[in-house]
Length: 416
Image 1: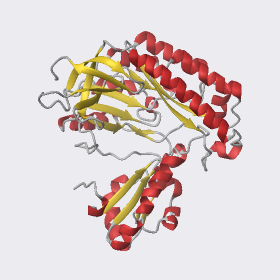
Image 2: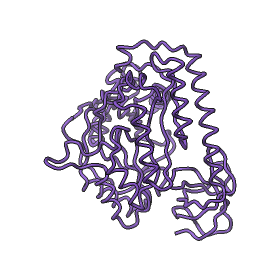
Image 3: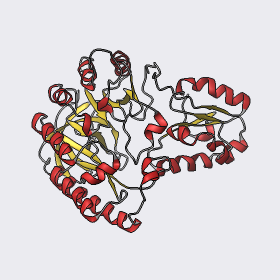
């Protein structure tokens, strides 16, 4: 059984991400904090799983002797066996990365914090070579799951109460490579099959790559009513020179054309992005080009990061991390302020509109209000009132006010 209290646990597993230093440092800080508990309870099994395990390997044992399991991205299905081995022998390492196959495994229930939403992985690995990223080294080449397996898992999750599914992949819209000989299979084929599942209300997918946003995928987004009109499409920079140094394999003009096609064909289209400031050699003019593309496209939201050198990446090998930290900070603040203004303006434009909200539960800030997300993945809060339980239902909410991060409104109809 699951427990929220580490003191009650017999096994504590950290599934890690190696994309950013900050995330890795936070995980290893938590692992370090378990040292006294392990000393008090020698039978406790502590495991580090995923990309950080693949990245740091046996070095983790040296830094954190309380760890008993190091399990890479290709060995998750062996966890029951690894736990037993760690209990018997004290330590076990499983880091095999099979580049030819992906595990055949179908979940039948959702263990996430939101019982009405689940993530479904459609692929593993990445074929891109972005110079700032460690993912290809830690996860290997792209391997796609079969359409049938994805649909089976989604169907089982819907049977357990899930109403919204987000498809996951490092470059999710390049799904289908090496999957079938003689015919092309793309992410749109998965969307058309998921559309048929009774009880599934919403479908999203992340993270997409601008190079693989095909017209066929855009048409699926436009024509399938269960597929949300929301796209997370990292641009990273508005400068072609920076994009070239990043090896992103597209230009800013290509990105603009993709967004223009989406807006032309997808009613109510909403877009979010990722941006990196202070990448190696970024000049004032190159940064200004990023500001311009933000002002032009007007993203609903942006995840903005200051570049930091990552050991094992190509950028760390061939480029100097030469943008001063104070300049990175200033550019980061400039983009944050710009996005804050754009988000406020876009959200205020929704005042008076009616948004369909999938209710998640009481607001963490005010228990008298319920919170959920609309089809554009925006947070919506509204008074709960003397109503029957609405968690897990889709309810219409009329927006009365807005902040850059939250829409506020009143429920105007019954949920379904």
